[in-house]
Image (spheres, rainbow, N blue to C red):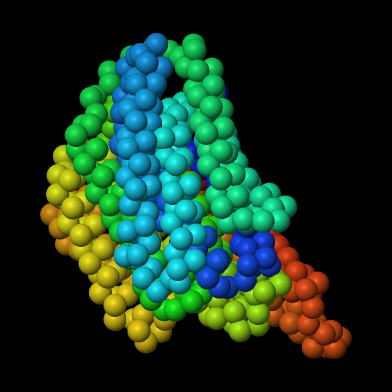
Amino acid sequence: MRVSSLLSAMMHFGGQLVGILLALLVSHLIARRLGIGSEADAFFFGRRIATSVIETLSQVMAVFYIPLVAAHAIGSGRGFLKATLRHAGIAAVAGAGLSLLIGFGAGAATGLLAPGFEADAAVLARQTLTIFAAVLPATMACIVFAAALNVAGHFGMPSMIRQLPRAAIAVTIAVASTSLVLTAASAFAVAWFVVAAIMFVQVLRMTRGWQPEAGIVAHPARPLAFGIAAVLLVVAALASTWLETAFAAGVGPGGITRLEMTQRLGTLLGNALATALSLVVFTAWSKRTAAGGEILASDLWRSVFIGMAVLLPLQVYLALHSQTLVSFLLGHGRFGAEDVREVAESLRWMTLAPLSAFVLRMVLVRILVDRTLSVVRLLAISVTVDTGVKFLLFAWLTPEFGVNGIVLGQAVSPLVTLALLAGLLRRRRVLAGPVRLGRESGLAVAAIAAVAGIVLGSLSMGAGSVIFGLAPSAGADLATLAVSGGLGIGLFFLSKRVLRVSIALD
């Protein structure tokens, strides 16, 4: 049975949503047990540097593996399994080499990116980074396994099972009594190898009786072009994360922790949804082009329209309730009132970043699946400009605005890159052309209704508190979040149902 593209995206997002909840739980536990200080900075430094590699590879290397796996899936039977295992083995070896490289360079990386760390914090950051990096062989193999499962139409299980390492961190931080940071990092490492074993078994089961699609001749993928493109995207994403980390460390003690908390609340949910949508679209378009099909500009902008209609209400909700969310989730234990105020202020600006990043992500997906474009040249230009713009914005804004300067730079830089790509592609009609919206056009009304519901829910709860003289409390905050979010979601789906909105991402 064919699972619809939207349902596939929602299944993938379901797994990501579990990861988001776990990430918020980890943030809450760290805020309660460590607060904002040198020990939390050391943990987040090691986690950001190592897991930026892991998460970037998990997303970007799909650019390389999904087209290859799609071609194998369409053109072969038992060869699908052999090709998947071969690619997984090569990826694991590459991951082992990268793990050793990061491990040996952990001390230098800490000194270069966070020269202001005190001696004890620097040692802890180096140790944490080394432990986190040890999981790369397992994560690289999992990227290939996930690509095979995605091409076969399985999105929920790969997404869900990869949240096990976050769960391991949460449990460890909650129960550990000594060596909190190192114990949590070790639990994360063990969990990733468990995930690799589970996904390996799932791939064996899935490919046991695999049959190629009848009557379709597979068009060969371009492994060299996709490989170079993936490397460029990985380098750009890592450079962005490391630049953010370095500038946040330069803000002073607590800078990295504040940036990390802000990004977790402001971008995790939006980026997870954007990743789910773009992954399903990329997989569908890769299979279409592997079978000789064509991707139109209308396909791109219809997908962008659908994604923005879903993302916009979510980001409005986060911006409107930034103070309440930060206070409710983080404002406990050693996380003081001033910390809450600063993170909430950064969070309001951070809600802009996923919107511009999503549009850029979809444009890059469109470029990657087009066999007539010089993919490597276009990506090399775009990632160089994007990284350069980020550096200039961070250098200009951070001295004046601190962490907020980094946040603003993240939101603005994708817009500059989009303008550049539009200029480079103006004669190829890759981005320009008639856009045909069907029943999904009603999503615009649904998005507006959701935003109205979010605002009305918040205002009604605020008015009720004033009328009945209710004092501020955690219960009142939770009620406001629930009513505002519930009303927004309810009006979104009610509008979608009344207008009979039909959505197809592929």
